[in-house]
Length: 350
Image 1 (tube, one colour):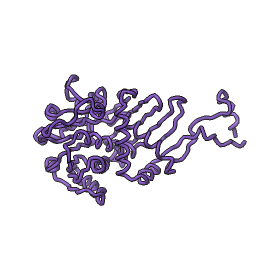
Image 2: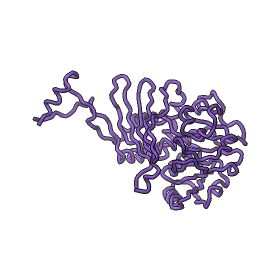
Image 3: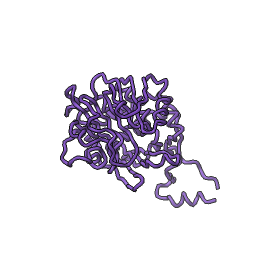
Image 4: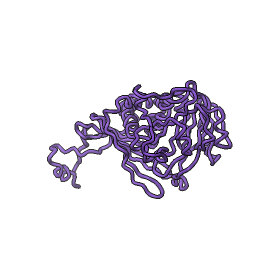
């Protein structure tokens, strides 16, 4: 028996890793980082419209698996993501992800995509968006502490969105810094490999911490942080994992995505539940102050939130078809009679 091809309405655009990389190069890495920051900024400006919940996490001693859902009432999106720091020892990625965007009216998916590469892009875009509002005006140098998979994306996003000119790299594994320096060659940044975290901060107005080990760590001690800097803390992203000395938090004005999630997973898990923080969407919307004076230490305690992934999914949905960097997949059952799913199965019998 010949099985008829599925109708177009049952086909879902799927963006594989290969197609995502082709899509990014088609748009241009820095152009897409700017575009993603714009999409996230637009969604943060309508923050109250979204369903919001801390991500659903399944923790183990060696890592975490999470689901990150949200909806604006028109579209629904979620991301599946893991974080397993030990994976690199066996040649695996620390973080992998995929995501889906669906039409709320029908419940039908409208996009299925890899999100390992896309998450790296949106995380960097989010960091740069926060720095746009919180970093000192004219910031030109960043200390990048932790030179794993995120470091190049972070550096290029800060260049594209904030105007960064120099990056000072440090990692306890010098090979990681050498990797990052090699990858950033030819991208218009002055790159320096440093011998210590302290050395990396020389002349830096932005400090980004992005390490992988799941532990309470002190990547930045209090005496390392002078007045007037912006700290982009993106490595503390699950319970029991931090990077900053508590004293730094007490000296900083702290900005977060969603407090209910950040108090569980971010740097502020080290603080009391009533310690004041500012939600970044309020700064972007103009209802809360960001950077107020030159000596202020601003801290973006970023753990990643579902609305940022929603923005990235929305961007891919809006632009990928014109590039052809996707394939249609037969994901949805589509019987001629919606009530006759069994009949469709019967007709497919060999």
